Amino acid sequence: MSSKPADLAVPELLTGWGRTMPSRAVVVRPATVHDVAAALTSAGPRGVLVRGAGRSYGDAAQNGGGTVLDLGALADVELLDDGDVVAGAGALLSDLVPVLLAAGRFLPVTPGTRFVTVGGALAADVHGKNHHVDGSIGDHVRRMDLVTPDGVTHVLERGGSPAGDRLLDATLGGMGLTGAITSARLATIPAPTPWVVVDTRRADDLDVLMALMTDPAERHRYSVAWVDGTARGRRLGRGVLTLGDHASPEAAHGRTGRAVPAGVPRVGVPPLPVSPLGRASIAAFNEVWFRKAPRSRDGELVGIAPYFYPLDAVGGWNRLYGPRGFLQYQFAVPDSGAEVVRRTLERLAAIGAPSFLSVLKRFGPGRPASPLSFPIEGWTLAVDVPTSVPGLARALDELDDDVLAAGGRLYLAKDSRAVPATIAAGYPGLADFRALRSEIDPRGVLVSDLSRRLQL
Ligand SMILES: Cc1cc2nc3c(=O)[nH]c(=O)nc-3n(C[C@H](O)[C@H](O)[C@H](O)COP(=O)(O)OP(=O)(O)OC[C@H]3O[C@@H](n4cnc5c(N)ncnc54)[C@H](O)[C@@H]3O)c2cc1C
Image (cartoon, rainbow, N blue to C red; front, top):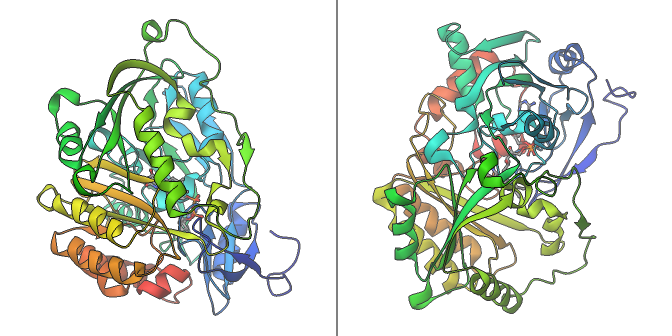
């Protein structure tokens, strides 16, 4: 464990990726699973939470006034003969990717950054560009080791027992509130080369973009659209769709090299006193980005890193938003609520909210057994917005109502501003989740700023 007893250690200031809502907690770094159990059983009145790499946007990985566990020491990675990978919860996906690629394998699901931990990915039940084909990461868990607040380690394997399955399902998307994940065994998928064959389609408006994204002829394992979040009027929702599949050796023509991700970003952003991002600069960036995309191109070979993790090339890019930070508004709606996507883009354009990162994806069926897992079949839109935009809070509150009326929900891993009723309405399984928490954690040991704010 950390060399100082928790009550003598100096609390550290922690934020999420959006750099809003800082709070202080004592950070403890357990060296073993035994130490994790000891930290949970000896929790103080403000409780304990495991924090991964802090890549969730809001307050999910904070526990103001309490203890935060950093499981960075539990980071072993082992590839098994059957292609599964066993990893400590503190391992980063960037530790797994080179091991997998060397064996012609890849992560079954990856978020848009590889600098997240295995534990954080499972706790948020993350999705990638392939949800419509492969589901979320929880669909690929073969085993998970979870330490509950009583200090007991549960080895959870799908189908092991109904109680075990319930705990496993609640932990996938459970945002660290069911226990500390210490390791997991995940299935992997074939990736015979470190390249992706990418087709690109440029769409002049939202109708065209959405039609392309639901066109059966355009079905690929990976599908993601960058949307110009500053376009208005007849250009509203214009964007660039990229469709990808892992390249076979024939398709890759024996190419190697650049495609293998480097472990660290090539350039970084220093702390900035003010944000250089203004409405005009973001609009100009979006214009260039849109124009430089080909109207239609097939068969481009793109490396794993630039395809899956383009933002990882710039370390600390979240600092570009300046000291006031930013938020990401991400919701999912069923197909019947597709118009919410349009209304969100309209509403944010109307208040002049500049976004250079707006991403639209398709979701396949979700996993209702996991009460707080985010995906539901249909659409998901994620929009990065500086928190300083006038009128933002009110606009997002109204959009929340629109999302809920359409049968949708917000993503807890991105949230920094919702109220409890919004989450309760979007997640009908929340009552079950709370019931399970009161069974496994009657003392209320596991707690986060997010769980306090949203009464999870
Ligand atoms: C650039 C960028 C792109 C992203 N793209 C996507 C995307 O495409 N899809 C997507 O789904 N998400 C995406 N995310 C969000 C990110 O994948 C999730 O927020 C993820 O949970 C972050 O993992 P982390 O290790 O940083 O966890 P943290 O942010 O530190 O923690 C997140 C939650 O996990 C819990 N947790 C962490 N470790 C453990 C553990 N060992 N045991 C129990 N609970 C634990 C924490 O308590 C907290 O509630 C993106 C984030 C960024 C910054």
